Image (cartoon, rainbow, N blue to C red; front, side, top):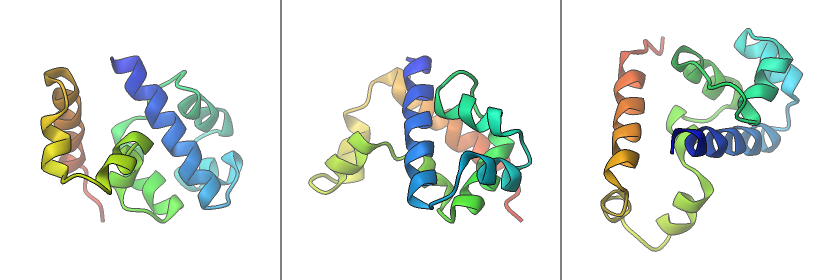
Length: 110
């Protein structure tokens, strides 16, 4: 389940990076990591650390939550209310989402 989350996150990160029309190298420079690190994130070889989330979001010019809105969720969102989407998630999926939100709240977004 966790590996699947990292894969989905990596796909979403790459999608948003390409939409922003920036290279892995450019994103890496803006976030303060090596280009190889961005590649590792996108290919789910290494998880992104939560302190990098606001930097990535800022570099991609998107709200941080957009990094966690995976394609399947966006497709369903047009037809369903977010509450219904959350109700359809398993307990383990909700735990992951809750932990991500909890950690994001700890990050100072100044």
